[in-house]
Length: 390
Picture 1 (cartoon, rainbow, N blue to C red):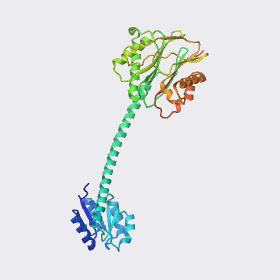
Picture 2: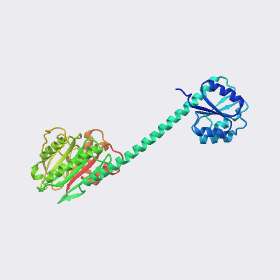
Picture 3: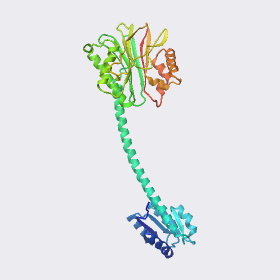
Picture 4: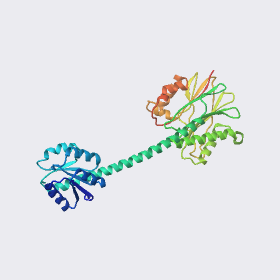
């Protein structure tokens, strides 16, 4: 890299130094200007910063103790190289402490040493300038990024409020059935969805869904799901979807038609008008739904393919009789991420133990799982219960 462009400035009226240094520099192709006083030096530097300032330490007219600190404060990025002879060499250390960058002893043992020191000083200055430019660019980029992140977070917070506004009230009672849920998102927005409502035929419909992915993309699909279930409720007679597997088949076709990149696992339950029977169908939702009663906790049958993958997944309807008192407990698969057990079977067994221990109560389950005190989590976690008291 060439470093011989720009001006070198020599401060000092010492004739010996001028004769030795100026001749060498000019012969070597440098553009050198010499000034006698500190004021002349400051004026020249203010008009155009030199590549290097050479200061004759041996010049008796220069008050180095005041000159160097002043020049360093005014021109912090200009390299200062001291020129000292045998008489003034004792002043090198104090001068270096006051801001000088390097020094040369005169007479020079090797003229090439002068070129080397200047080369290093100029190269250091340019590297420092480049680094400062990069720092300024980085600062501007960081500021822009921070602004963008703030806007994104505001958008996410707005989306969160919309998403929360779409969630059903919790707990919510229908006659002697109580629906209750808790969702802990891994980001601001969640890909887990829960809803429950009464159909026109007095059956109660409820579901828990887990959209693939995280954040805004997954949250948008939960909004789509909410809209589809609202359509089901509004056009119930027209759609004529009476069973759980028919509803899943319809949802699957609707999601395929909008060409979403995400797929959805979903457990859908229908509780009969007399509250004695649970009809359900599963679109690959995992972990399995648990029913807790006086007989203990047990998993319902798994099965099915996620919604939004294939045109004919072939969902199956299942029915179970409901006891006098029960709690249906559902989780999203994010719960497995926080369980300490190793292996899927061990985690499933632990969930059953937790449900038995807590009798399926949301607050107790949340406490045992630590859901209300979690820090960063890798996946959304949803907990959902349907309880019939005695």
